[in-house]
Length: 150
Image (cartoon, rainbow, N blue to C red; front, side, top):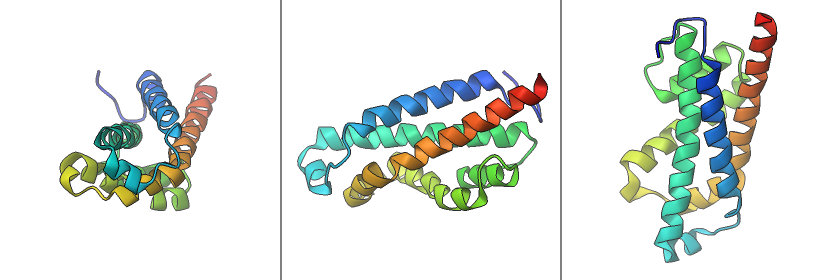
């Protein structure tokens, strides 16, 4: 599928939103898991890290798709999230804090030997709401876009 500037593909966005929602729901069950528990249970740590990686990747894929389809050049994942603020899809303040998820995703994917389980535990307890809010903002954009095209 080719994305032309100005026309995001709602089906692609909805697939990523569904995957993000499912990953967040799976991670919700593990809220309250401490870094010590993660260190003691490598399988649990792996599952939670993988779930967070999926959340981050889906959010980044959503941001990248929206940015590129609007004609933006985004040299990295954080820039894609910044572009959403520039486009008015997410508030600038939200983008400025949420953009850190790009770096966290890179640590999970490329620096997995150096993952700080304290950060994983903290994100599990306090960061899932950011993914939910991000999804809500993208849904709002989709609804607005659909209404404007009708």
